[in-house]
Amino acid sequence: MTISLPGFPSGWLKLALSAAILALGALAISPLASPVQAQDTAAAEIDPALVEQGFKVWKGQDCIGCHGWAGNGERIGENPTGPSLRALEYDAATLKEIILCGRPGTAMPSHDPRAYSDDRCYGMTKADLAGVNLLKGRDMSDAEADALVAYMMESMLGHPNQPSQEDCKAYYGGKPFCSKYPTAESQGF
Ligand code: HEC
Image 1 (cartoon, rainbow, N blue to C red):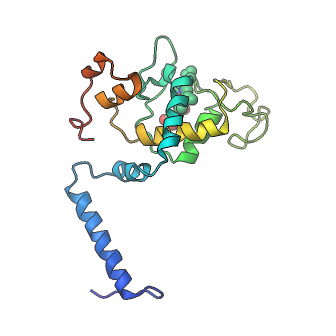
Image 2: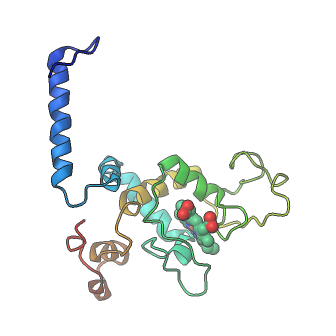
Image 3: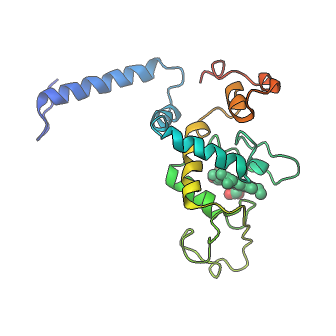
C-alpha cells in the first residue's frame, strides 16, 4: 500500500500509520474498548495539582447533596435528586458552563454569583428568563470552577456508575464501610 500526501515525507507517514495500527490493535484487545476509554486517556493529561484543588471544591460545594459524594446521583437526605454525573460525555467547557450557570427552570442551581446579571450564561439575562425559576447555589469563582471541572473529568466522567472502593477511600479517607464497594479492578477499570 502506498499513499502519498503532499508535504509529508513518506517515512513519517509510515510511522504514523504503524502507530495508528498499533493503537487500533490495543483497542481491539481491550475489554473496555469504547469512546469512554479514549476520553479517559485524554483525562490522564490533566494537571494533578488542579485535580487535587478541584477535589476540595467538590467536597466543599453543594453538589453532593443532590448528586451524591461519588456524583452517581445518590442524593443525601431530602435534597432534590440530581442525575448521575459519571455517565456524562461533556467536554470541559460545556461542563463548566452548566456548573456556573445551572439549568434554568430545574433544581440545578447556578454557582457564578453574577449568573444572569449579564448574558454570560447561555447568552441570557434574568429579563430573558422572566417567569423561569432561577436557583442560586453556593458561590464559586472561575478558578474554582476550572479546578472542579478538572477533578470531575479525571475522577468522575466516564467512570462506572457504581463507585469503587478506591473512589470511596479517596473521598472518605479509607473508612471501613468502603469495603462494601467493588474494587476498581473487579469493575475492569
Ligand atoms: C439542589 C440540587 C442540586 C445541586 C446543589 C447541584 N445540582 Fe447539578 N443537577 C441537579 C438536577 C436536578 C439536575 C438535572 C437538571 C435538568 O433537568 O436538566 C442537575 C444537572 C447537573 C448537570 C448536567 C447533567 C446532565 O445530565 O446534563 C451537571 C454537570 C451538574 N448538575 C453538576 C453539578 C455540580 C458540579 C454541582 C455542584 C457545584 C451541582 N450540580 C449542584 C441538581 C443539583
